Image 1: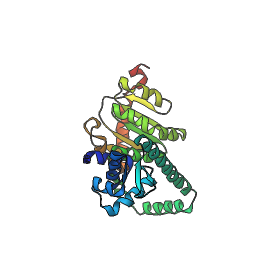
Image 2: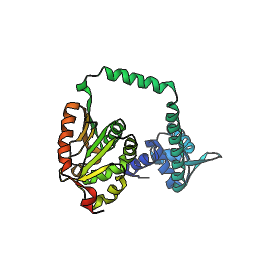
Image 3: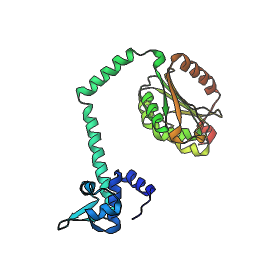
Image 4: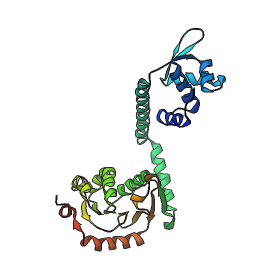
Length: 272
């Protein structure tokens, strides 16, 4: 049996299996029913490992063991395997989420918070900075900084960046808005942005700008800015810089304030 390495790699990714497991499983699928020894030869997996691998696949719901001499194994239909894997993943994820929720009620989280608070007090202001790689990490960090906002959240972004931020950050923006935080967003607004503007209209004031920039300011103190144009970079290679610097962030806020006065409201630009 010849199965391409690329195909095996995809199976490992989709089903969270190791290399021996995908080799044995695909070998069994090609035979329907087979013994451990036969599968070992077909899949080029050491015989000493084939029984352990098949036992693991059985526990995960990929194969069924048929009693007899010799013991044989039956392949479960792939569509059924997909459903079983989905169910198992959901069950495991629910357990992990519950465990983390339970953690909030324990002394462990309090001790972690105390450690962090004590550590922050020892940090030099110049050390409160860092780089973030990958858009997923960037948005996680933006959500964290926005959560801590007390007075203002100022966002300047691209057209597509505006749509992404409304999709990804609207819940946290709604929360800070309820606390009285002022939220302002500036971006080059196109027809593609109409739905996003409507979606965020109750939370943030949105205005049009032709300027090209990508940054988020929190309370004129924290600044996260992206160093690349989003159209020219793959999301996994996007890069952002975070700094906690009232001096520079405050100055940038003042410049934004001047530009903001000349920006047209989104509703007038898009005529909605």
